[in-house]
Image (cartoon, rainbow, N blue to C red; front, top):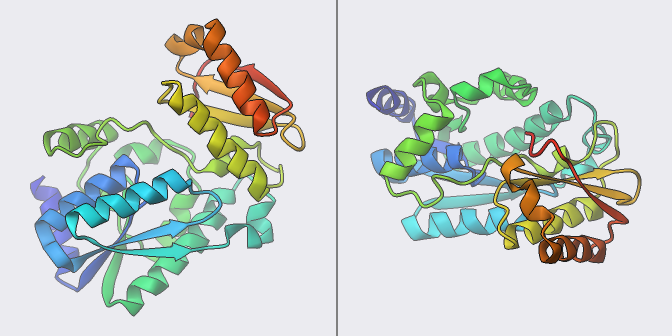
Length: 260
């Protein structure tokens, strides 16, 4: 933690910090810790787009309001970019570039010297083309520089009483459609609501993947040990009726279970 203190204090020495706050455990821990260390020198910036669920935005607002953290919400019409909307394999690069350019501009207007995000050591092992965009824009990642892993962040968050320390990993809604499948706002909304159906039935870690055109097939992923629970008669019927009410033609279950 001394290393994290050093990283944050060195950045804050040059001016206020703008923390990109998505509501996930990494950025939540970073925002909580930086604010406890640096107080009002820390400002939160949240990008609101078609890829970002309303529930996550509501959490971000509530978290900052409870702690007196200055929050700025940047609304971005992400699907207006034809490259992003076409969903290429490097979509994450273009999306991160668009989002962090907006956050960087907004942060400068509010006197922030640096934009920082919640990237940690474990993120370096995944396919994350968006990290290139962060590097190009000079976004700092103090959790990574301090050597913190996802497990470290969860353990520290639990010790500090951060209520979402065990929150399941979340990826943007665009990841629910195969690459090179056009991203449509109504389909993304349907996915968000479909996953909420599963959450309401007690499936914390889940995904609803879309296949075919116009919501032809919803492929459900839950943790492998929970697959049998999906097949309970009442649960199965609730999922099937709930997702079909959202416009899905067929509902299937991935027998391999949840995959990032």
